Image (cartoon, rainbow, N blue to C red; front, side, top):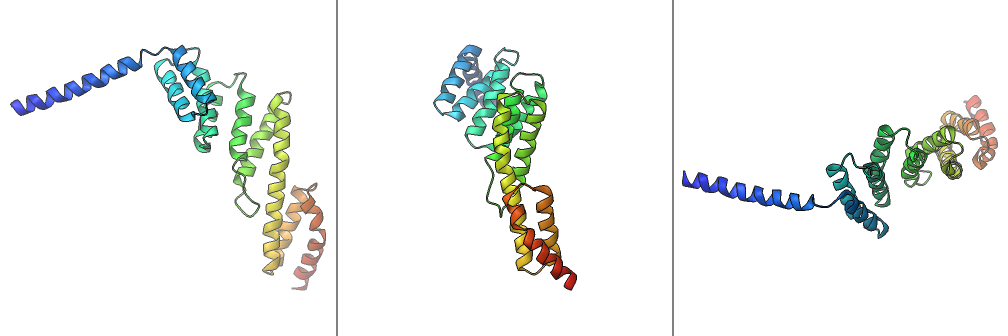
Amino acid sequence: MKKLFLFFTIILLFSGCALFESSNEMEKSAEELVSEGSSAFVSGNYKTSIKAYMDLKDWYPFSKYAILAELKIADAHYHLKEYDEAIFAYEAFEKLHPKNDAIPYVIYSTGLCWFDQLDTVDRDQTPAKKSMAQFKRLIDQYPESEFAQKAKEKIQKCLENLSGHELYVANFYYKTKKYKSALKRYESLVANYPNSKESKEVLNKILECRALVNKN
């Protein structure tokens, strides 16, 4: 019985310490947490910044700074190259605050998360497709936004990656003598990316493939 009493006493003591520490932490005001998060962010201490802004969200969910905290958490994840977390945070912000003035920036930043993951033309082109979809949405919904022009510039790079990938795959089929598949890819390249340099390069290949397909 004494051992049981001692056990619960220890548990209560530790619980008391945890509550005391939590109470001390809670003594930070919303303004102090904003200052802490902002200073850490500017200094490049993004993990510290996330911690401060997360505390702000948890402790002061109805503060006028809570929306800022949500956005800066997403930005900090982006700078840490934690793209999945950043995309999740940006998308959550847009769903919660669809009329907020920062939405054009949020859409652009979501696109950047994908854009920064662009790889060589022989790799999966999901990042190019996803980023281009975000940039096009931004241009369609907010054509006057300062971020719309930046999005247009990024779209060009996405198109170059996608057309380059189509050419890479088509050439692979051609080299392995799968002329029917190669022809389909070459024609798709010309149809979907008519202004690309790759589309002009494949015109002769299309004629060759057609002749070989008909021959067989």
